[in-house]
Length: 120
Image (tube, rainbow, N blue to C red; front, side):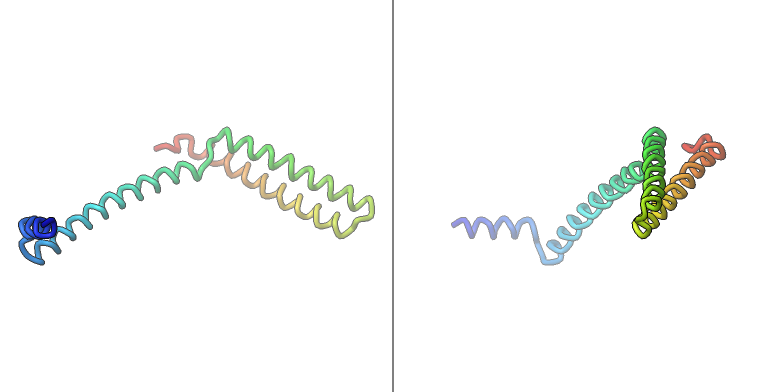
């Protein structure tokens, strides 16, 4: 009995296979539009998350400077103590980290000077 009712209801809603295809196409299009809007909103949100706030950037630069200076000093101490291979590796790592950190600091500093109104 239920099966007959379902088939009668289905035949009333969908008059032909073309109507079913059209309904499925419309539903797919609606789903696509919702998904595209959600994806675009997530992309916009991720853009704001990729660049840290100036305060967080300043703190990160300070911590990076302290850590790289510690690596340079640790590498120098290891060289003095006779651990040449470990000392050279630590000293090189610290020097690269320090140079990278200083480059980032100056890059941010010049961006603030050149583009004071970055929101426009």
